Image 1: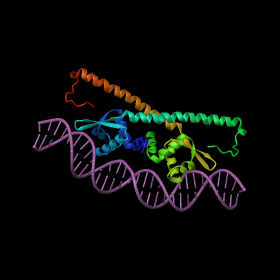
Image 2 (image 1 turned 120 degrees about the vertical axis):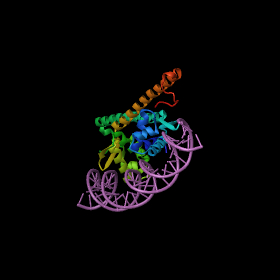
Image 3 (image 1 turned 90 degrees about the horizontal axis):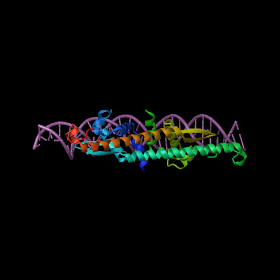
Image 4 (image 1 turned 90 degrees about the vertical axis):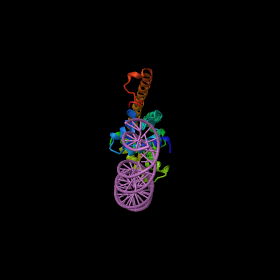
Length: 119
Length: 119
DNA sequence: TCTCTAGGTAAGTCATCCCTTACGTTAGTG
DNA sequence: CACTAACGTAAGGGATGACTTACCTAGAGA
């Protein structure tokens, strides 16, 4: 199980995503989160554990309370992933566009006569 | 169900994430994907449908084949989401740091005498 | 037209999960 | 020390979902 898999699996549940977004807005205690959620407090606890194990949040003890906050490294990793994906996709599209125009200008240079795209 | 929820739910399954990453690397037909996956071809079809409904991939017909490729808008939306999250978190951390040093320099200015953090 | 290939769909099963209630634990307070 | 507040954990149940096999459809080529 890679880090990315764990992160996406953690954010894959709508309730958990909502909790994550709330924590991302500002640090919250467990009770504060549960107040504004349609599920019980233990459920919130369990979701927070998953988010924590995925490296997306961290908790700080404050008396009997436990304050959860976003873990910047987690967000950074996801941000970088999509940045890379975006960049590579730009290149892929550019290459595809070049290939298409090249084929248009000089189709006979290609050995492909089936009409099918070469994937 | 928001767009973000659908996207994360789609990427939340490891098998589906693997399929998405394969398609993201370069366009693939369904059979090509299934060849390198530990699940059956119908399973891949079902995963691709979920990814498509989430707006992450698109398909192009090519004879009897169906070639799937990444949908740039989907990646862009996720990229922007984490960019924003990252920026806001930077600000949040800066604010927290400022507040901490301010409290250290002039603690009496605060009405909070409990020692608990004001969240 | 007959056949083959590629892929979507239906139905069913088994595992995984999400949530609840109940309980245990720790820290603050009188 | 007793009580409360805040939270984590255990156990169980009901629902979701991921996968399989079987079937159906559409396009390509003889």
